[in-house]
Image 1 (cartoon, rainbow, N blue to C red):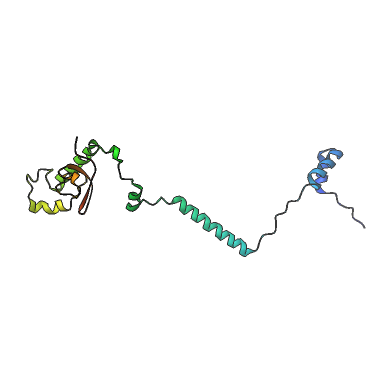
Image 2 (cartoon, rainbow, N blue to C red; image 1 turned 180 degrees about the vertical axis):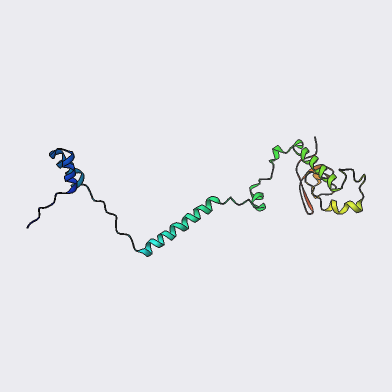
Length: 173
């Protein structure tokens, strides 16, 4: 007893829905001649695990780089880039007047003259405060200097470091 070869199920369904010629054409184009796309065999498990670890590490590094804020510049780097310096042609006395006013308030606060707590200042009590005070913005008179052109001139202090003071602007006027 020989069994008849069964017709393809897709062809059988197409003949029910379409005419025999149309069903045959559709079957040939869409089913028989359709390319069979195969996925290549998967690589070895160790290689795949290694690639996965590498991908995760790179992803983590990218996330860290993205989230990190840039480091603030060091004082040495700021000096090298001259970020805090005002160009010579722009150094005029009116620029430094608000800084001097702020320094005056600072000194009154340090010496307790602001709230009327004290009416006078003596050297014994105020000496330590004045020795450790910040002199940025103070009007200073140069009494002694290696540079004779600076002597007896009154300037606004731009930077005060231990025993040396940098002056910002020439005298008023």
